[in-house]
Picture (tube, helix red, strand yellow):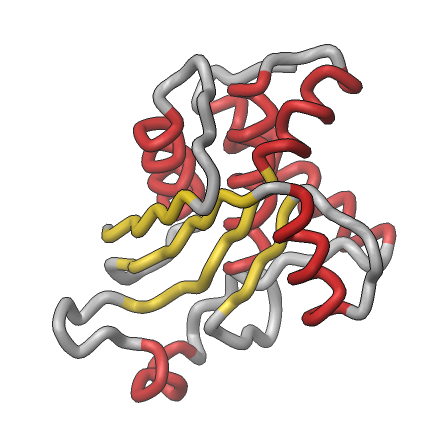
Length: 165
């Protein structure tokens, strides 16, 4: 697995965010049985930057906590059968890794939401990466049934990592 982390701002977390990001991503890939080696980009930004991205990509005029940009299309969540049909545009020719997608996280939102929800910044950061990884593997939460499934998978991954609220 290749994890490219780009810091548009200095995160100044009181935990090893690079190490945690790698663990969360690896656990999500394993628990969802993703069958290929992967390349993922994680960009850490401030509220202003994520606000601009949210407006450009989703036409929502406010900052958000995390944005996910999947490279793959799925018939159903975690249905990896059709990946080979998309192979040409999703494999890094230098590494033979599947470029799963990009994650963008607002460091300010990590802090705000950790405080709001009464848990650690570490837990919030891990949650947002888990949430985004599931989006990169085809999960969504637009309908209540989809949301329940995604929430269950988020909970299982975080529990497996020993990261509790």
